Image (cartoon, rainbow, N blue to C red; front, side):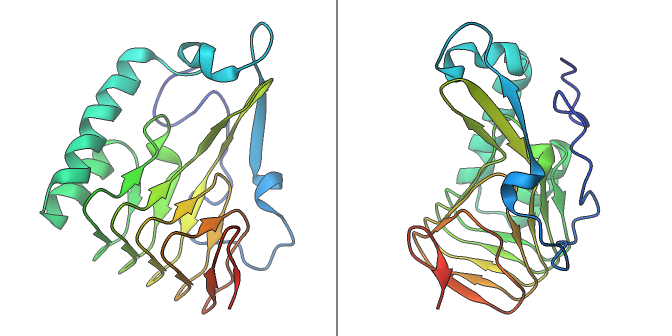
Length: 185
């Protein structure tokens, strides 16, 4: 498997420009790729077969710094070094956590806010497989504190995700969602 930041074992190239594809009827599952686990069960046991351990350690250390640094400029600069698409004016709250394995699959639009302790995941390690999917957050979207965004999700421009929500489906532009799973309010 290639370990470059541009290609996570695969070519998840859809939506590379950071703009959500809100005209499509695709679900997040249509935008994720599944990979079988070597051996049987628990894909997390073989994470090192999916991604280079030195790369994950580097990403972890950079993401740790992003989580605790008070400077928005520094956070955005560091995330761009990991391959994350970060638009101008993006704000990351303290303890906000982008994906450590595949941060290059995250695109955040201009002036978006990622709240305190929010988590953006681009991977899911499951029993017999793992899945990868790009996450796109539109311009001026707001992700509340403690929210979790799952792989393959697209959040539209000016959308709002309430605190502690689990976003398992796309959020249309100018929509507010809340809950576990997050639903329109």
